[in-house]
Length: 219
Image 1 (cartoon, one colour):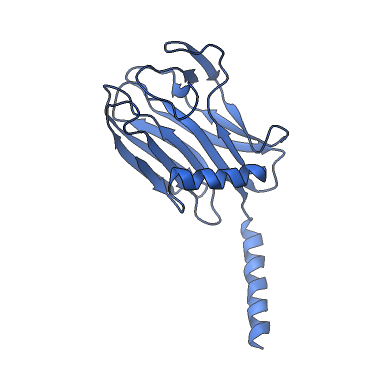
Image 2 (cartoon, rainbow, N blue to C red; image 1 turned 180 degrees about the vertical axis):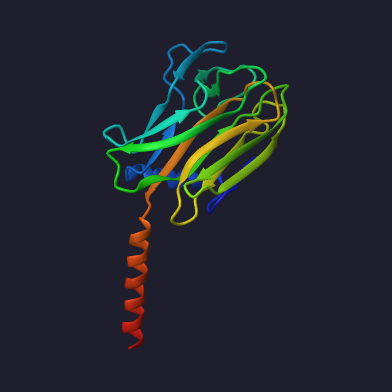
């Protein structure tokens, strides 16, 4: 399934955008792999306080700081199929509390004003556990975007791609996850794209500059 907000709202379309951004050191993907011998029932905590997403290739020094309201895990599920590799991500709060929030912080070695402008992740449908999954993106001006989709209780049958795109001049501060179920749900292949957001003063100067150009053309 697909639940998206913005242009090129398909998994394939977003992959192409991330690839371009990655080459420019302004895009990053976390596939939640890297655990030796991971099998169903084997879990590794990877973010007790937060984690980082590398923007660009292995030689890039740009790192996006991410904090989570809950401790997250790398997990192998027998009841769900990952998008890539063998691992998923979920939270550790357990039955009765499957909600958490990811907050995007500073970018190490990033440009001035650089922030997250696009976010995407895939929720994996799980055998025997149908749910309604809602993601809420909060922007820097306090406005929000909401995406919600019903996931069938069958592994791989209803994996759903969620994508948020911030309007021009805005950026995404956080994304919250909320399910109608009381059990954990797995996610895979989290991706972000960053951009430089002009300061309001810069936008004003740009508008003045454009006005001068328009005046000269009319003259």
